[in-house]
Image: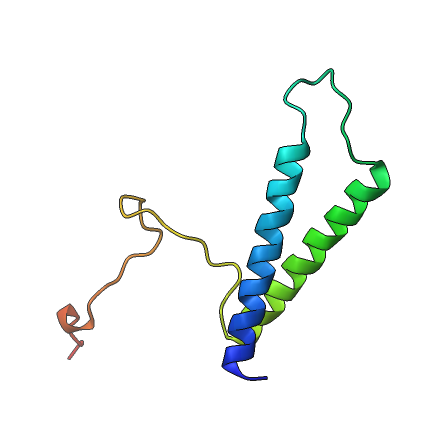
Length: 93
């Protein structure tokens, strides 16, 4: 598959995920006393859709060589690694 196909498919998946999330957010009653408008079967189907979207996004990321476990880091977040410059090391004679 071409890079353009991956890009288009990735955009489609993102749009579908965001649209589904917005629909669920709009349909969720703000008052807990109100009845949820979707049936249990529909809720399960939406969850399955989210699972399929996530699985395909992981496949696309792996095909592109992206580690899906990578997470963003804050600039002021403490580092968990310490880089030591090789130039400062001396050999034993």
